[in-house]
Image 1: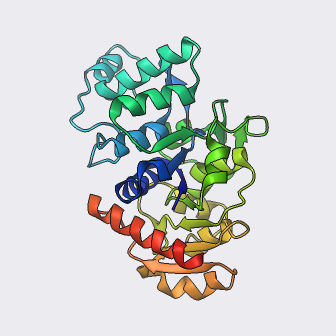
Image 2: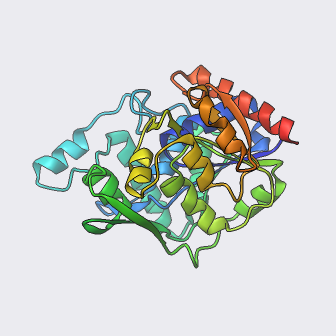
Amino acid sequence: MKITAFAGGVGGAKFAHGLAQILPPEDLTVIVNTGDDFEHLGLFISPDLDTVCYTLAELANPETGWGRMDETWNTISNIEKLGGPAWFRLGDKDFGTHIERTRRLKEGKTLSQVTQEFCEAWGIKPKVLPMSNAPVRTMVNTDEGELEFQEYFVHRHCEPVVKSFRFDGAEIAEAAPGVIEALEAADAVIFCPSNPWVSIDPILKVVKTITKPVVAISPIIGGKTVKGPAAKMFRELGIEPSAFAVAKHYRNILSGFVLDNEDLNLEKSISQLNIKTLATDTLMKQPTDRARLANDVLHFIRSLQ
């Protein structure tokens, strides 16, 4: 079974890693959100791409889910001491990734090419693709004005109240090479348990149309997000955060929806949206949980077919 997965952030990276453990590499393509990308300290930084790649390469910090394991912080500490901007905490190994990415991009390579080269260097076998080589920037409209995503998310700790989102550049950005081909070749598309508003929606804005069956995994369990601000965003947009709210957000494109056993009481409401459901343990506390959940989801997809 060929799977194309949409991913962004820690939850998406963990599930992609689960898929990579049980699918042949040639049967898995992971399309990653780049709406979070930004330029900082003169470097081109791709947070979601790096989180997915570090996780697939088993280099990610197991405690945070992002950044590198066994990291040191000499560079950012010195920048801070000198009075530079240190709010976006980059470790020394992570700096190496951004420095080398920036060098190759300035040489004229595309983000797709650089990502492929990094994956080869890190021993990542499945195909990992940025959603676009063109800049698409997630802008958050808040009660304090419009903010770039990293300003809102990291610098402001998600404190401003969210009113809406805008994906600057998405209307003219083309999908990166291989993205449309992966969607056409897939037996099914999976939306990993990532933030619907700022991880999956930017990808959808770029790819525009999906003709294959789509299954989404809820990033919200018991009304709360495992990690990140998705529940806060739903609430501030006037929507009660729940697995049902996530399913309703995607209702026009979903064939199936995976929710946690804790939300079993929502299964009937989701089914009434004409979406097939699977209730299982979606919390990925240990690396072994990732493959277990991926296996459950693939069995569910086969049942839909």
